[in-house]
Image (cartoon, rainbow, N blue to C red; front, side):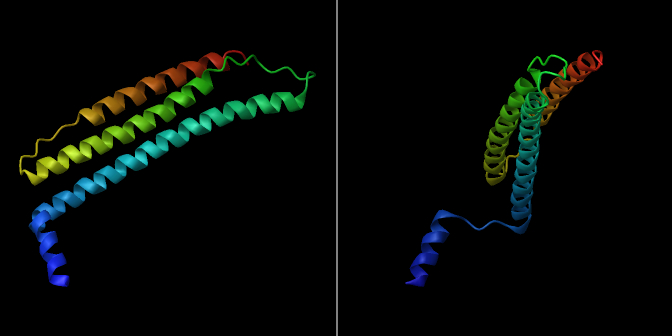
Length: 141
């Protein structure tokens, strides 16, 4: 019975050489790094949104006697965008993982840094927006 199971497995997957195994494992480690990155981006977005809600709750607790600078609500929007960017990065990382896996199986790997480039540009753009937002808010104090 066990021999039949082993024979079935050998028909579906061919054994790979140790070098190819290392390449597949490196591909998996890269996917895990992208997953950690996307979780970090989403967590940062979550913190930005929650901090905005925290400021609103503090202003309600302090009452009408204390005046806080007017809030424009941009931090909530930026936080939601960051969570969405993290989810998109996760999806793109998985797509890149599967594409690389297929290229490694076909022994026709073509390196590409498009995902890294676009993620860098998006995070840089959001960073610039955050910097401008913080500069605008600190002028009021």
